[in-house]
Length: 168
Image (cartoon, rainbow, N blue to C red; front, top):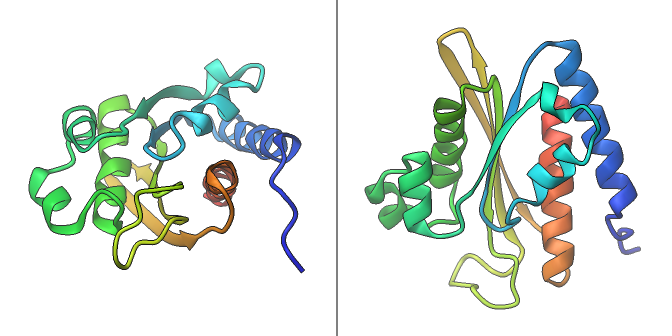
């Protein structure tokens, strides 16, 4: 049975949960987005009062912007490609360093309809969450293969990113 479409109501519900957790823990969040184009930041800032726990969002669609805005090393991009575990890790860490937030989420992927390369079909998405604990930063990553059109892939990516924030 196919999974139901990710709805705006579901995204709002998840963003509200993120906000409650962050506010309760007196922590702030940042986002680093490629394939979602700022949609995670939008979902979070749609929550009234989000200025208390949302620091800023980075939309780094190109390789150059990933390097410039987040400090993703050129050799990492060249060796692994923009849609990779190494790049999403660097994006998440870079967002924390540049924003000063305690937790960050990063996404990079191929939403389609084009852009697929061998080994990375449309729907391939890497997600990363970085959490600052004192001077240490812990990063968790996840590879997803979403089905559907461009909108479905992007919606599912936003939902997975928000769920990951709730878990952390």
